[in-house]
Length: 332
Image (tube, rainbow, N blue to C red; front, side, top):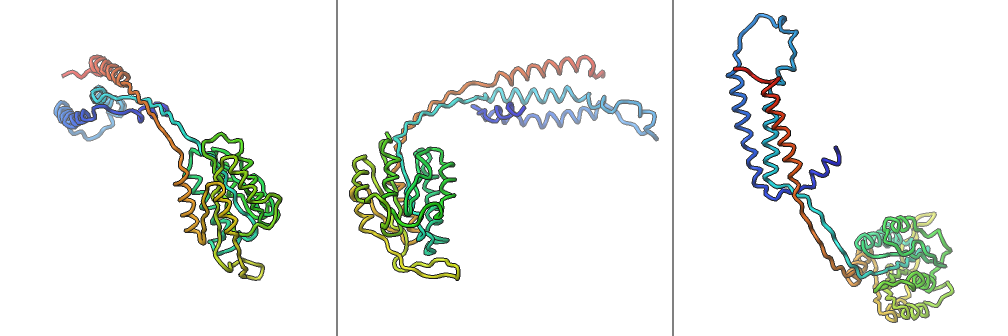
């Protein structure tokens, strides 16, 4: 029954104007009520006890032929409206873009100059960015004092977003190993066959740990045809942090020169984000610059689906004739 209802709801009517014919049902019902009341006389009795043995349902069965006739009219009207089922085939050719997001999760990302802090603000903006790119493969690399792949390149964005949500600064040693973060992201993309390969690297500090020189990693990215967009995240000067004894302020430094050089070497671009609104604007700008090219061809085939309605109408019409001329026949 459920499948039948789903099928009927997917049908389209080629000539919906014929549905106006259903208005004829209103005067037919009015005429039937008037005729029925006129045909059967009424009289008053003092008690109904002598008639208690009569079936109450037999009286209602007398109206069944008329009900069947109304159903026949509805079905014939639907047939005239020409119901059709549509079968669509959509062929999509995508010029794929593979994106790896390298996210700084060092202790300084807990600064509260972004609400509620830098890390949570970044995760919120990245989530929106991912949701707006359903056709791309996207991966996630986390780095602080070292780097590792949190989620490999995937089109399963629900899994990616779960990995993003569980990311925090307690998973690896503290520090800011920009070169290691970039190198790990490159490793995820170097064997990609996508026509466009992109790394979005976000940092809020100075490169102070790790084994890979950031500029050497940038040269390697260039060799593999990977563009790197770098983002310097955080306000200038001091930023508030939540400590054991309340809020305290600490100096924040961003190696903008290094981030600019990484972007320049790889053909990318450097962005500065001093608050969450600006960070969102940065990701929106990158989203516009790195759009997948999609060519879509859609084929639609419509088939007439009136035959089942016509068969049912004929069946009910025959049933009405049989009932009205046999067991439910009313004698004048």
